[in-house]
Length: 295
Image (cartoon, rainbow, N blue to C red):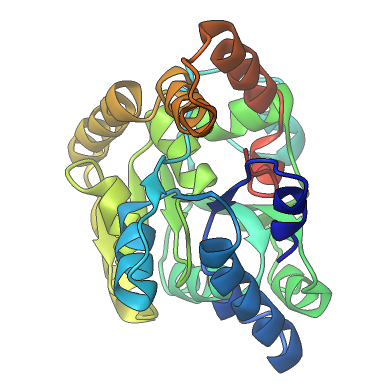
């Protein structure tokens, strides 16, 4: 909402929209209303607006008849890491389902737990993340912790890479996303991914992953059972997911496009060194914290 201030000093401004934050269940009426005003300001105040998904681009076109630049988030291609942290968490490689992200109501972690608890399997469920203005919700999730269900705090660096690259399946049951960085990183790690069928997730996993009906615990349980039972399907999906990240969502491509949009407002040409510096800076940010950073 304050993006008009630099323009008073004749400075070019660009706002990047990572998602429709006012829709998140954790916000009350007042906070949601303020965030809705912020959405409108993101269209009206800056010189340009960028969005991270085609779904968001269509939303702003439909809702405000406003043009936006589509520049998606990027992912990192990861190779399998040796075991250092997994034994401490009593986890075996390729023997746990992984959720990575905030413990927040719109992420539907409780739905994943409900579905998993209906399945008789020795494959564990791991939820790694932390609360964001949702301490009570996170505490409720932790009451389900047991030998089969493991809840971990924020992870970064080698610990995060090890957890990502050794999972058997990644599940994102959320009912609201912009373009999930956790999902991008899971695909870049070559994991078979299962997501809710909201448009933003379908856009990313099309041809490279699986979906279930959003909010439907029975359908989520069905899909988890199906994927755990077929290693060939998981492996093929994981290869397709990694290749999709390598082809379409590499940070080098993304930062070059961000740079192009910024510099086009100044009437300048892109300088490759700027993109390389931004790419290395983003990679240094833990996955669980990157959704707090806008270019």
